[in-house]
Structure formats: C-alpha cells, structure tokens
Image (cartoon, rainbow, N blue to C red):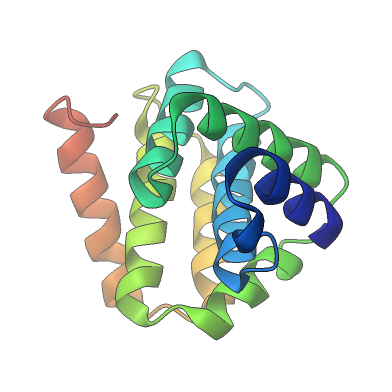
Length: 155
C-alpha cells in the first residue's frame, strides 16, 4: 500500500508529500469511504459522488486528483481483507473530533442514495468501534450526516 501511495503523491500531486504520514491517512480515510460505498454490493452513483465530495472536502485536491485517489483507494480495498490496516493508522493519528468528522463522512456516503442498508450501518459501527470513537460522538455524527443529506447538502 505504501509504495502505491508514494507513487500517487510523487507523480500526481507533490513529490514532497509522497512519504507524508498524512498522505497515508488520507488514503486510509478514502478507502473507508469506498468500503462503505461497496458495503451493500450496490455502489449507487449518489454514493460514488458522496465519496468524491468527501475526499475533496478533506484533501483539497483537484477533481482529477480526487478521482485518481478514489480509484487507488478502490484498488487498495479490493486487496484488503481487514479494515484494521486502515483504521489503525487513523486511530493512532486522529483525535476524537477528527474521527467524528470521518464517521460523519461515512454516514453521508451511506445516506447518499437515500437508502440505509443494514450492511452499511454495520460497517460504519464496526469502523467506529475500531477507531475507539465514543458512542455519543458516533450518534452525533450520524445525526449531522442525516440532516445534511436531508437538506440536500449531502454532496
């Protein structure tokens, strides 16, 4: 995974960021969004757009760079059998507020197609547990995401 991250940031964004721990964290966050999108085995277009918007919001990348990073995240999740490699990086580096914002993005992906599937909810709960996010923060993130999607600001 690390070689592909170095290559992505080195060739397409900023060579000095190739070994940046934040770059690995960003890819891990993008990979978790992709996992939620795929959780119900039906990656709706609205969910894909929510993933792209969530990645753009957090990384400040161009549209093309965002698309490439999401494609990289998709390929990384295909070979991954465990969420631990992604959540470990985030748990060790994010404070609870930042973890809560990530969980909110995951909920926004799940709510994007206006249908919350049991698999999506299960996966987000599992990720929140692996991140050791307090339950109150988990619930608050879900409520914020639901409100934003209902307001039409889900993207």
